[in-house]
Every structure is written in C-alpha cells, then in structure tokens.
Length: 127
Image (cartoon, rainbow, N blue to C red; front, side, top):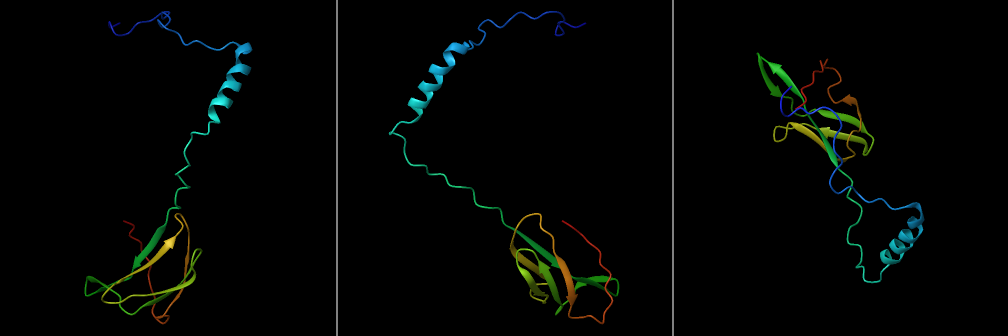
C-alpha cells in the first residue's frame, strides 16, 4: 500500500454543512418569497434562444475516363419536411445543390431527376 492510499474510516470535515431543522423551513420559505419579490429587479433581457437552423447540400459527380467531374444541368426533385417540394439544379458555377433553413436532424427524399433515362448508382461521402 502506498502512502496515498488510506483505508478505514475517514475523519469528518472540519466545518460540516449546517442543515435547517424541519421547524425552520416554513420561515425560510417565507423569507425567500418576500426577498425574491422585490420591485428593484430590472426587466428580463433574455428571450428564448433562437432555434438552430441547418442546411443540406449535395453534389452529383460522375466518373469520366477515370476522373470524377460534377454533373451539370441536373435537376433534382426533392421533398423536404421544412420546404415541401423543392428543386435544385447543378451548374458549372455551383455543382452543389444546397437547401437552407432546415430543422436539424430532418430527413427528405429525392423523388426524381431531369435525366430519368440515365441509370444512377448512388454512393455517399459525408464530410
């Protein structure tokens, strides 16, 4: 056993907390109620915290000659709980489609694309 390990009964703290007796509780509650209701309190300046807002973004990529490149001009028809039906279009200026003002943790569906004659393999890369 090392010097830091002490077994056996421990001595009480030098200044134990003083607990109120059951007979004192009524007067303590009354005192707290009177002192808590002062007219010197200022107005409450804190409101409710703003709800957290999230977003969802996706980029559609294709492999051409062994290299990945963004698919341009693709419309995704989506159904999002906070937005309802929503469409996003990929372009060369912005290959990603982003939907803003969403509640965190929501779900959604991609209902269709503008290239319905193309077969797509969906893979994910969440970062």
